Length: 563
Image 1 (cartoon, rainbow, N blue to C red):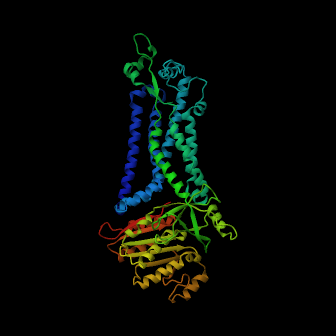
Image 2: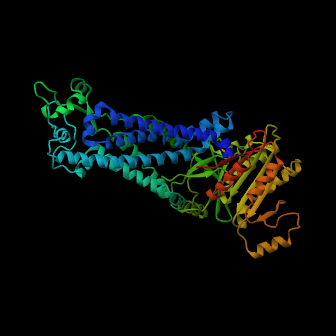
Image 3: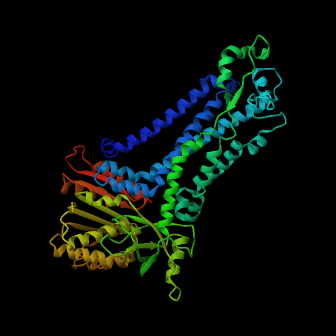
């Protein structure tokens, strides 16, 4: 626990502040509507459900204001660039943008549920008090006419005893927009589940973009002013604590007058206007950049159905580990998919590797496999920053890729090759441990030439210990294993041709972390992963377990690629 707090204290602080603001806004709004004089008569009809509905609405507005900021990728990339000299702990917060986006979404769902349930009680009580003929204060308040000359005398939005709850819901602006917002939110949340995103990315992509309807509906949701309170002038002349008990004698010459009411002005648009404008300009910038011409200079088909595209684009500038969004109009005009750049900043082109993992990627590969057809047009948006940009800020780095998850580290490894070629003396990193976990032998061919070149470069420069390969094969048959055992004494590996041998099975992470902590007893180790969630949990645990409480000793900092 102590190690975890040591690595995540700032994240915990941000989370506590966010939760604290939610609690403050909820309690503040709840007390305003539960105790405020302005809503004394409204509470006579609705009871505490009024306060629950309005408090949850306040938190809904707050979180709807926040949810777009983590998705402003250009803003995050700008902040990452301007914080290049900031402390590591501060920069790492930018890598949690998707996690924070999800947490805010969960909070929106929670307060939406509270808001809906509270208003179900409110509508039922509006209807019950309108139908009542017992002469109670609630029935008198509900019978105040909508046709008074003042125009502000009514409190119950159900104008007649014949009006139903369903009719009022579907014909009023707050009711109708509330239904639309709820449907949109349900579609977005359900399509965002891990299974849907992994297997049916197109469904997730299209449904998530109806967030525009959500924000439009939220902006106009409160225009109808269904929830009403007593006007300030009416409170001064006829305070509810003085006049409520004499409600049967209202408007008599020597008693209180009937209270006057006013609807609350719409507030949601005030909360979402600034982030909405910011996100609008974010999308305009991305649209402008995506329309710039991209020229494909080379197409390579690798084993295991992996496509490599090498491209050039005017003004394109990247850093190691960054990613881009790619669109192929011949497949879909609207779908944009993220891909990590596999080229190095020192190269005069940028490249991606695409593995068949869904309808869109399969169609893209098929389009480039057709030899007698023109090369499909590609549009590119980006690049955008990731945690891997910080790899050279660590003395020791562990790069861990699973399958196609090796792509961000290909960019890093290529950059290392160029740095050694040009004798870059500003390189802070002293040692790199590269782990690549693959299911099949063909995957190693994707970057086999790169790994061989790096291995040779390290030998020629006398830096054999700088780069350490750990290649693991998790899927094999007896023939492969037997052949490897017979040729184990050879200088090069029979599967990869490298001098570093391939291991069969999965890494024993406790042993790996323990060994690195022993070899580098006073180093800061950056652990970078691009791989599945199960592996992430294991590595996070090891980072916490093997980090010393003494800041002068070994510290492991976990970083993961998030798109």
